[in-house]
Image (cartoon, rainbow, N blue to C red; front, side, top):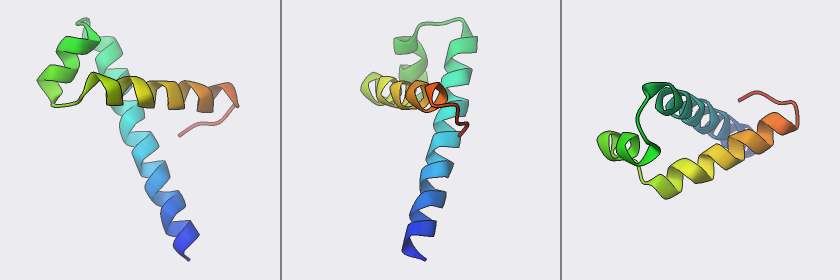
Length: 62
């Protein structure tokens, strides 16, 4: 049961970050400016972007 909950939490985070990254990329502003306007550190943004790109390279979707 614990592993299922952790898996769901991970999927929720992946989906949330996927939406955030898509919003940033389509915003037309820099990552730094978008992150500042949305209260997100650029380090977190790039960490999650890397995770999502690696996930996509494996042929998976969040």
